[in-house]
Length: 226
Image (cartoon, rainbow, N blue to C red; front, side, top):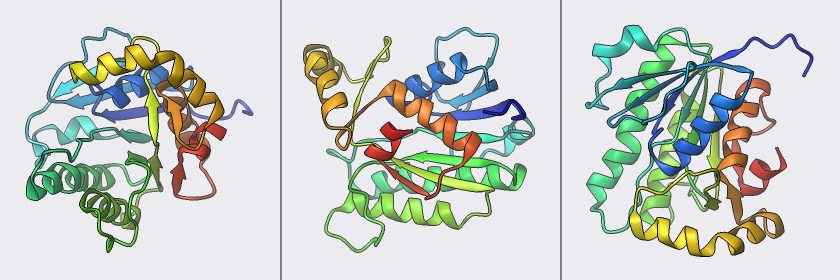
């Protein structure tokens, strides 16, 4: 860091989810992040001088709040749903349509923005494979990379250990995290290819938005190395 960096203004989608909570924490702690605008359906329940929130329901249409989305340097897009038990159309809508609607709005308002999207390990960039969610994520990644952002980065964490009070919204998942915490800590250290932490993920996203990265798709080991 050479001290010439401007401080970043960040828009965060999905701040109430497990990944988003971790990214929000790191943004609020990082002196290089000037402000965070959390856009979501539910409030984060966080109070911080750097944090502003917009509660917004229709993620296909941002025209009502466009004026508040200008002037940002980075977007951390952490909205994600599991494909488990979800029909194909709904999963595609929640994964692809909503992400692209947000990204197209933001690129028009902030062409100098860096967009980072959290997808997942085993995402299928060919869009041709057998696994439906991997194809949908692959198409989402590919189409995001075609938009005229200053830069876009796809983060593909494998397992994520929640730290510092970050919680899963799903009770049984949270219970597993609590019981498995010692094992997860070990795995995050011993197998960086398959495990990262909410802290490492958040810190890596800030670093990439600020300094760039040689390739647009980051796997778990890239995230940990950062």
